[in-house]
Length: 106
Picture (cartoon, rainbow, N blue to C red):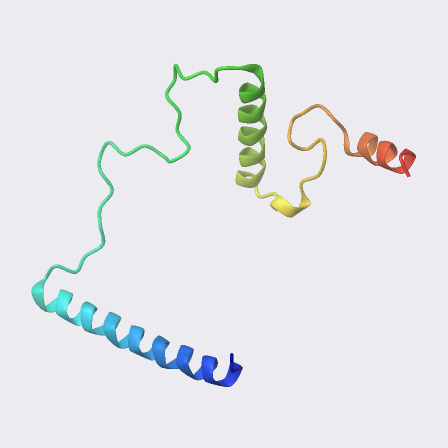
């Protein structure tokens, strides 16, 4: 049977063991001179970069790509993703229009 206090004690024990192992790995890496941050390849591209000639196969894929790109732009401009509402994605709808439509359906 599950015992929350026993599980908590085991979790704390495991976290201490992990911390000791990580500390040992860091110490050994520093001694050997092999501990350093990995460098990005010189020809690395951003994760969201697309080839210039890549086009989605169909209209739905193009629409979804455009929506995703516009949402990413909003986040880059500092908008909170939770505050983005209907119409903010670039689909052409307006938040007021959606509110009216939702109120009318009730």
